[in-house]
Length: 215
Image 1 (tube, rainbow, N blue to C red):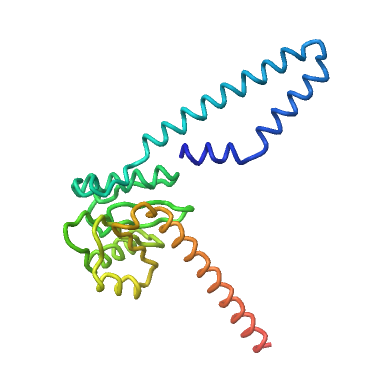
Image 2 (spheres, one colour):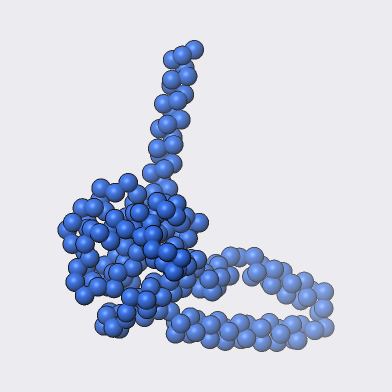
C-alpha cells in the first residue's frame, strides 16, 4: 500500500494548499518573524525531500524481483509468494488460499475491490489447459469474477483456446509478461466491469421496451 499512499499524497492538492495557507497566515499575522517563517518552511521542505528519497529507495529495494533467471530457480511455493508480493507491492490485497484446500486457485487478489482467483504454475515445460480449468473451478468455488493463470514458462495453444472460451475472463500471464502481471489483471477486471455495465444497460432497455409493449 505504501507506493499508492505516497503517490496519492503527492497528487492530491489539499496538504499543499493547507501548508501554503498556514504559511501565508503566519507571514501576514507575524510580520516580525518572517525570517523565522521562511527558515521553518525551508527546513520542513528539506526534511520532506529527504524522507521522500529514502522512502522511494526502500520501496525500490523491497519490490519483488523481475529477474527471469531468478524466478526459474524458485520452487512452486516461492513462486506463489512472489506473486503475492507483486500484488501487494501495487497496493492490492492478496492472500494464499491453497493452504485451506486444493479448490483450483492458489491465491485470491482483490483488484479494484473485485476478487480475482490466481493459479500460479512454476513449470519447466509449457502450461496446458488443465491449469485454466483448475483456475475456473477455483473461481466458481470462491466466487471470483476474474481468473488468472501465472507462469514463468509459457502456455500451450490448448490453454489459450480454453481461456478464450471460458465463462469468466481469464488472464494468461506468461514469461514475457510477468512484469505486467498486475496491470494485465487490473485491465481484465475493468474490462469485465465495462461489459457488465453494458449488459445491464441492454437488459434495462429490453425490460423497458417490454413494459411499454404491454401497456
